[in-house]
Length: 360
Ligand code: GDP
Image (cartoon, rainbow, N blue to C red; front, side):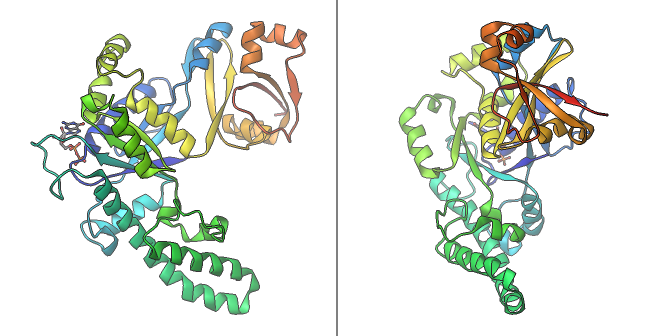
């Protein structure tokens, strides 16, 4: 499954946040048959109000939300791209992830020293991006002579060479591939290079509790990282929230002017950043959100439940969530003509409530 790597400079609250993510994974594990949860993996459920509504309609015994996996990528220090610290391991680990989440310190606790002196989100983002850009520069500079040689005998390699040269130009100006909007940058042609800065980015700003409601500060930080998404949280509060009952957690959130935990926001934004969407199934046993890529077809969606479902796919009966809620049951949806029979070319839409028919 897809995962998001969490990176950050030392002392920014990364372990504190990760600890909360790990506790969340253990809580979810009660419902999900996870094989084993690795110590450096945290999992959060993606909040979705529709699930409770469906569970009520179908009398489901349990609810299983979609989930997002985060991997703790330790070892980001200045010079990591030149092998400083455990730089090489750091780069190898981050290469395996599908998106990069940077944790940035904004909280100003004088008892927690900053590796570079005073607190500066802008400088920290630059430090991290510089390491990632330098690593990509090395990759691209090594690839270009090889691609030039290959392109001489194989015309099909010309696209990859052009893309690598365009990427080199972007990186040399100190920009990430992610933020670059160059038309000539053919991302598909770059895929084989596994560039770090070509992955989608998202940002977690670790604030002091009283800064959570500072809309001017939030707007300023959002602007700093656009077009990447930003999540604002207080890692200390998140680590407390995972220890509390739902009621107590809500009370704590309200006391700092929030409606939803930072982890929930992170799950939602992470899911979106990975280019994922869900479809829904419901029955007496469970109501469940299944994760698919945006643009997945009905058989691909069935394959997420079981590979046999994809292989033996016949058709899907689909009712959109809003239609289902309006009429109150699948039987009513059928008689109202709201249950659609879709074939193998159907592209799944957000909010589809589905039952697959298949041969075994
Ligand atoms: P890491 O080095 O990035 O993993 O940072 P840690 O999670 O170990 O945090 C470093 C120190 O900062 C610890 O003493 C944490 O308790 C503290 N810390 C983490 N997050 C916050 C926060 O949001 N506010 C405050 N005041 N302290 C925090």
